[in-house]
Image (tube, rainbow, N blue to C red; front, side):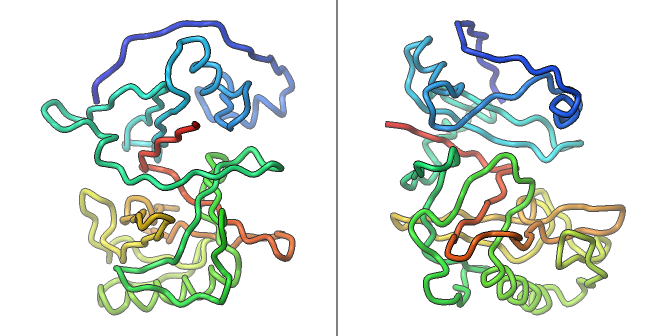
Length: 252
């Protein structure tokens, strides 16, 4: 991945010294950068001080041997390998929504598909802005009326596609786990049914095994989706996993 020259500029920041706050940070981290749509968030401050576009690219790593993530502010180009096309030109784009009472970003989903087969869902399970993109939630969280049929459909598709894949006792908080030794592990993660989120505007966001599966302990891999708990009735919002996904956020 090509590196970019360092830039400096003024920024509004705050300090916190409480042990509870510092203990919540990952090892090696020295602070938190806000990426919401407010005027004091880092993307807005970078755009103002550097006179660049109010947009940023974000890719979160999975940790371990998977390498580092990347964040690029202001719309600079990104090349993964020399000689390859600029990455952002090949991405799919869908309208980005915000809500007055929330700092999160939202997108509208039309349906979910497993290996290009559309999954049946209850009426009005998907509404405008029903999918929340959050960096603070480690796994994709689904409402119960979506999570339960999704898990059943994934297990059925997995059994039909990979007969030697052996399901094992689930490891909390996950509901579906496999003996990793019975799964095929390729460059794009475990070979499992792909999960596609059909977005507004006819675009699709497809997750391979590298996005949808997680190793929870030696020899056990789980589907990285969890059931959303404690959500008020009538609120149809999900949190979608962001690891190993290149996302470009553009504010007009």
